[in-house]
Each structure stands twice: as structure tokens, then as C-alpha cells.
Image (cartoon, rainbow over the protein chains, first blue to last red):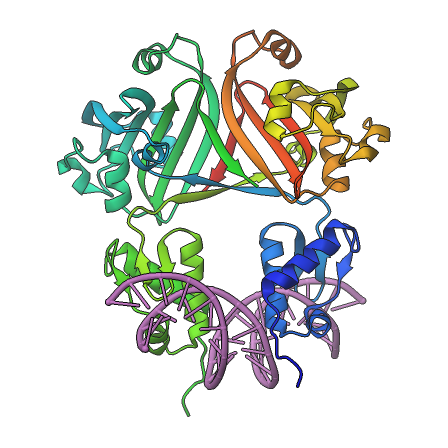
Length: 233
Length: 233
DNA sequence: CAGTGGTCTAGACCACAAG
DNA sequence: TTGTGGTCTAGACCACTGG
């Protein structure tokens, strides 16, 4: 009576990973094909495939049809940046969340933004500036343009209880978006809102989102001085 | 003769995504179980599973055994940050890469770093400061501590042709790491090296890597003013 | 206890790309 | 042309967890 045991794809991945890390297979080397590995590990090819696919997702191996699988020469680290809504980010730190509307107006976005979002000249937007506060202190300034052609409901929405940030996530699903992170010297108005000296280095995160080809919103998040974006590899 | 056709997991995902985006299933709603969906889409449950797993990875649905699958209330955007070696990042922009060693010494890291890496008091490190240049101009300053207990070979490595950044990726595989992104005012020495005024806002990326429980390296990348980290959702 | 997702298996066909 | 990964299927057992 031999014990029936199945091999988990995580086990296979762990062993493959070990061989890569310990240079049993060096960077650039081809590794055995799925069928052979399945025989060696005494499991189904599907299981090996799952393990290798996972390693490929992480950039540790490169796979091509016919050409086989190779250990990556320069594995590119991939960190996943989680971008929660501000309320959740703040509450996750155990702080009390509150937001205030600093300014709200229907307007045409400046050409800089029109170009970035590939908008027609007369696209009407809702321009709304929000401050997100943590325990009553400025956390991040949210300068946002909402496309009223794509999201007309935003025009009549009430943002006093639900911030534009949260309202949009719940009411205007997007298919894709861009993000840019940079460091800038605080402008006079930013410094004023954040309660910091003019010129202080601040972290800026700009994000645009689209639903297919229609732009939804473009936001510029200006964090308080000292803010750190954390993630792991 | 009915045509035999298989349904791809991408097709299933697309249809599920459509129903989520168009509020056929609203945020918080439970969606049918895998078996039922498989019947509806006339495919194997495995295929539905693959599609739902993908949506769960992206944070659009949450899944629990027995409890089923629900549309996420506040989908948390996940952006993948690619962190290539500096040479590749620069060459990908079509620029010429070069690096110079500004300083190199064996030393004990300051307590700030010892604490962050959870190191013993007498851990010897290689402290090496490198400038990565794009078309001859300062691109990023790389202030790095390499753990000589974990990576003894670094002590005798020659970093004139291969930067510590690239050398480590090729010679010291890691299992995991931390990343922190922040904005800081350029210090006198950073400003000097980067050719910018003291106090200019600069983007700083700090990264530590480990192999299991042994720390490998800790690096502080100080980018030239105006640098942007780009990604997409 | 029982329903739901998580995963494995064996087998099959297909798409791609190297030679 | 042909080897390799990509994926689908049908069926099965298991692990977790809500009731």
C-alpha cells in the first residue's frame, strides 16, 4: 500500500526557487521542460505549469513557447503598490478620518491637463479640492478634475459626507489608469494648506483613470511633509 | 454537427468584469458560485476559477470558502512598480549609462540602519556610494550598505565595470525586501553630487533586501530633481 | 454538518516560434 | 516542421468556515 500523495504547486515552486537561488540553474540557463519536471516531481504537468507561471509573473524566469523556460538574467523586482481610498489608508493607521472641501467649481481644465488626458477643448469638468485629515491634521491635499461628460452624476453629488475620492471609486468604475510619483517643492498654497514652510519637499502622486477610452478623473495628491509610501518585494 | 468550442478564461473574466462594472452585480453583492457559472458559460469549473482568481488578485472581488465570492466594496487599486537595475532603466530611455564610485569603505553601519535591518552590533558592512549617470549627467545617487557576513564576496568584488546594484542582483539573490518612497530636501552633499541647489525637493527610494532572515543590502537612491516614478493600474 | 473555493490529475488540442 | 508552453475539460478530493 503506497501512500497516495499529491504534490502542491507551492512545493514545486519552492524547489524550483531553491535551484535558482542556489545556482543549480544559473541565470540565463534553460531549465527542463514542463513534462520532464512533472515526471521528476511525480505530479501533473498542470501543477508544474502553475509553479512556473508564478515564477514568471515575479520575473524570475522568462518563458517562450518552443524556446522553453530560462532563468532570468536580471530579475526585475516587482513591488505591488496598494492604493486604497484615503479614508481607509488613514483608518488603517488607527487615526480618525475627516475631509473638508476647500473649493468646488465647474470649469474647463487647463491645457496641461487637457493634453495629458487627451480631452476635447470644451470638455467640462468638476474641479474640486479636498483636504483629507488624520486626527484633524492635514494628511493629503487632493486636487481633482472629474470629467462631467463621462461622469455626469458627479455634478449633483454631495461630497460633504463621502469624499470625491471615495464617491468615484463607488460610482465610476475604471478600466485602467496611470500613476506618477514625484517630489516637489511646496507651492505657497500647498504649503499653506498643509501647514508647512514654502519650498518644503513634498511627495506628489498624480493619477488618471479611464473607462475604456473615456477619461474619468485626474487627481493630484500632495502629501504632508515626511510622508512615506511603503511596499514590499 | 455542433461546432466544438471552448471558452477561454479571459472571455469569462471579461463577462464577469462587465457585470461588475455595469452594476449587474453591485459592490457587496454575492455572485453565483463557480459551479453555476461554469454551467452558465458552458465551460469547466477550472476555467471559471481561473477567471475569478484573476479578479480576486486585482482586488475586484473577495473570495472566501463556504462564504462565496462577493464584489469588492472599495476595490483597492494595485499598481505594479517595476524596479529594474539602474543601467537597464537608463538604457531603456535610450540614454547612455555610466557609473562612478564616489566612496567605498568597510565599516559598521550607523545605528539607524542597524536597527532597521535588525543587525548585530558588530556586523561589518561594505559602505559604497555610487553615482549612476545618464548621458553623462547625474541620474541617481546610490548610497548602499552591503552585509559582508551574508555576502562576503562583495569585499573582493570589483565594482568599476559592474555597479554594486547590478553585481548584487547577479550574485546575491534575495527572497524578499522592503521599499519606502519619500520626498526630502536635498542635503548639502546630495545637492553637490546631483548638481542641484541645497534644499531642492528630491525623490528618495530606500530598499532593503533579505535572503530568508539574513539581510543582504540596504540602499538609498536619491534621484535627480524632477524624476518621476511611473506606473499604471 | 454541508456548501464553497482551492487544488490536483490525466488527457487533449492548440498557438507560437526556433530551426 | 516540431518541440514547448498555454489552456481547456471532466472529475475528484480536500480545507475552510458559516450555520
